[in-house]
Length: 387
Image (cartoon, rainbow, N blue to C red):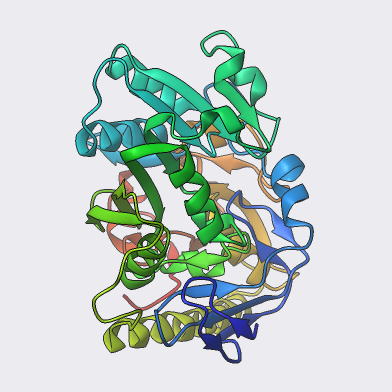
């Protein structure tokens, strides 16, 4: 895409990465969308064209974790214990923000509000509220939230400067006007109130570059610029607290905008890293195609029934025989993915000889080395990259 950067308004040129349709969304579904990604050489923000009818997509199509009441995304496995995403998000909010009884807290882009519910269980006396751009989650709010504490599509005018804390878990990467959303959030915060937000870190989770509905990819500098332009002062910006994401706590200042030392200029090394990520995915697509040709006629499996596994599926030759997906998340084992069963590692069919590894390349090899169920089996592993 060409045009202007959504953060600093600088002119951006031809795409740094392009891929043919189909593209993969953050919910691991396909859309008939050709992906093009551009890097702003001024502030370091990365953006792609927005999906057609974006508002309608989030209202009716983007329904995260609605398959069951307890559906959640697996974050990590620690000493055999599964830690899910909402649990991790709750822990981070409680660690980074001082929450006391009587505080009004809003979950902006709440979805099922499972994280907010865990926060309220951990910190008694909070006054929880929820907002989302879809009405699909309303049934999950009933019974523990007052109707007046729930809003969809538009923020109520009476919520102006009401909240001590606003949380926005993985919201800004989805929106066509991130600065407008930040100004909305500032408008419902009390002066001095805190925004806790998380956004993907494309520098740590390079697969985020390929997510069709993540039309913004933030860097430390573009976050700094976006928050300053909307009147927020950053108090915390962590890139290691949530794997593959930035965790930010920012205080709402009385000013509508804050002067930035050095302006919007990004670190040249940051720009070089972003260009390298774009090149990696061009090479990864070619690597998958080569492996498919090399293993023609062999039954294969894809480790990972999430985004990376879905990406691999769309890049494999049509005649590749995919027996199944493999995943440790119990919530994914009960339903097929791309028409194939999802099985636990111990249930990998014996006639599978090739495994395409659909995991974050930064962690893929260490994760696969821990699959004790496959020790002693001769399996050809195809990774997305060399590292």
